[in-house]
Amino acid sequence: MKKTPKKAKPKRSHPEHDQYLMRIGKGERLYKFYYFRPVAGRRENFEYRILTKEKTDGMLEMVSYNFKIVSGVPQKSAISRVPEVSKEQLE
Image 1 (cartoon, helix red, strand yellow):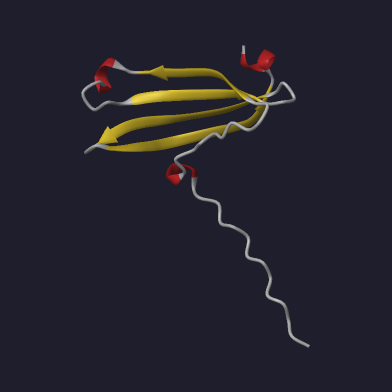
Image 2 (cartoon, rainbow, N blue to C red):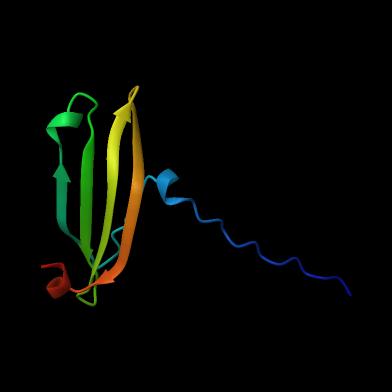
């Protein structure tokens, strides 16, 4: 009797290397998008970004991160993710 090979689970990419930090699925929508450009970081094209999406159940998902462009390459760092928060908690 031969053993059947186990299916390998797909590896999840680390958030810093995932170009899609938040995916919008069917029935979901982008709720709010904030970006802050501090005066001190304007020459370096530095931004702090916050994205929120509304899920189909009415709850929100939020991602925040630092964003800058270095030698023409976009870079993300200090990524924080909140998988589920209500609109009331966010306000």
